[in-house]
Length: 339
Image (tube, rainbow, N blue to C red; front, side, top):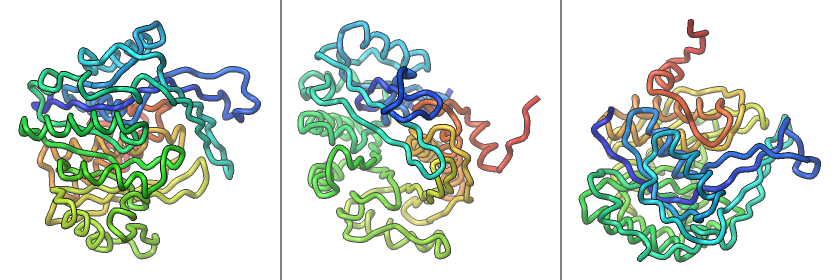
């Protein structure tokens, strides 16, 4: 079991997925599971042995209880979940195929988490005994009240001497890059470890430059200017970025970049035959956080984070259910049958 203890705040949604890669317009039934970006990170870290907890707001009804039960089966502490509000947010997922992209339709307006208030959380109790606090841009996107609650958590975490991480996680269906930058920028003063996509438009707006580099020109140093700009502007200690090339809905190329404040590394390139793309970035975030927790060097952290994100694409559902040993195997390129 890891000596580190992790807590995160974020919305958990009921995910309704069409079977057999059907279109949403033709589906007559849906596969129901639960997930959300911060919860996904907590579950993935739990597979590595981290003691994890989730702060969120979930309705006190049977659907809410089903959601809590689903999360708890993976060892996430739900004792600080606020049980109130009228509804659990939903999202409908159509998994794409070949040249047809996956599609998401959100139904999360007026969800319990979007109507959370900072005073609903007893932050000293929620953070007690824990050393890492994590949030994402998605939670801040759902409402100004959720953003204020995240800010209160960040303030309490820094007061308690905790490490704070964020994943920018831009979602165009929720807000524009400019809106995202305006709401997230005040929170950056709390952040020690910044995680995102090299092509994330939020970072592009916040930094005034793009981290998107064509495949033929990619080296670790080709990302140095971008990550050093982030460190210089916002005071981050460390930066981790995903690098994705979309060839089709079934096949992506995938790498990771990690900068520890001095050394920068680019992971090996993974060619992924995708089972379920949702949660891939969260698998990467968990891998990067695990590398920082263990004090690994830049190359090992980049390789582990990229492999964690890559293997998450091969697991149905939002959660990356891979052990540290399995991720290390993926980092080394091993996919032989285990007997």
